[in-house]
Length: 342
Image 1: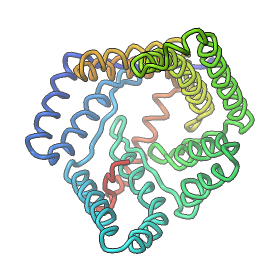
Image 2: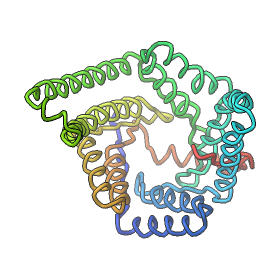
Image 3: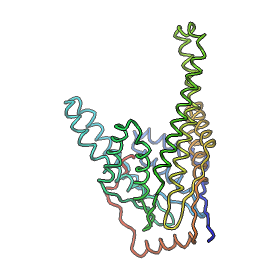
Image 4: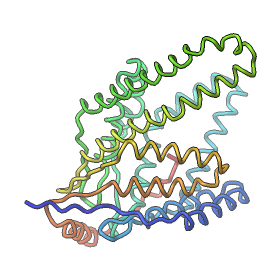
């Protein structure tokens, strides 16, 4: 049977987004951060509306007031926790113990809010998950990673991705991610090997400069030497992180399905490494003014590398979801589903 591949498109422009970005910053400063909730919605609406599948854009429908409520809640909790140390360190510890079990609930509510406010062809996405499962993924597994000295990290990443994807649905159709744990460990092992190689290169460079030992006794010379090391480490780190990011992203997305549709991601490590490196350098040299340019070019590349493959008519599948949604009516968002900044 012939497969139909629909590639995602991104039509955002740096000039257009820069105007939104700079206004968002200025108004957020003038309003002491209150406008930041509206700024977030405006930014997301721009990126979503310029992301297209089958020539149709996505929509972001969040209410800024709910985002503002969530941020106020987080701010109040942070202030209480911070100043509790003045009263008693034991009180601060008690508040931390109380908050930690609430973290999975916070994550579920944030994911539910963000998914529900994302739509494609008037069909909303949904997220639904059990608290105990979230408790294991977001609290139990990090503890396991710590006790395993990092060896359980690939398992944690896989379970985290699987938890989010497998509890998300488009209309009534659930997403599923079934990438094997062995592939995660393979990427992890290669990344660690790359890190060790970089460490050896830096060490070899440093040891090769024995003749500078006397000169490096001077503080200014030592500072210059450390700057050279950092300049060497920066692109090496970008290469290592780019390798990890590309391979994990491709693995997760290319093993994700929706109904009878298969996603495919074909990001390239060299391209992502160059994007990360050049974006960071441009942002530093422009004192942050090129952040919109970096965001647009990164989104353009990431989205253009994503496609949806189906053996059946993708349009018919979406039409069926729309008919179902219209027949039963859209779920009314829970007023407690507020954006908590996650």
